[in-house]
Length: 138
Image (cartoon, rainbow, N blue to C red; front, side, top):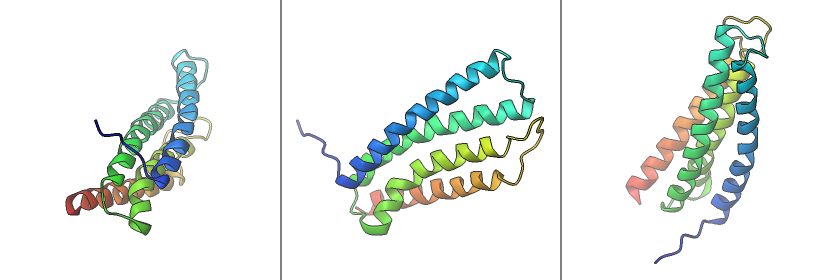
């Protein structure tokens, strides 16, 4: 049986990503308060809170998988970092975009901070495209 050993960059990113899971847990706790009616939000704000929480959880999980895959490529330097950090950065930026763009009391549509969501989407695309090409060419 072969033992998997992560590269130093992947191990560092994985450690940091795992620490962010606590913030996702706090988001889940917040959503239980919302669902119980203890936090008054508009339907729009509830939808964005759920979307932010879901994106964080899914993208953190995908980000951890991408670290193992990045180590299976020949990517190094800037491309190696893009492949390793694109998805975890998207997890932070996209969920922050959902939450920050719906913060105003009584909001029924996103404010200008929705741009953070789109920066996260760009990070996600850069990370998965770089990693996908890296895997196909290794």
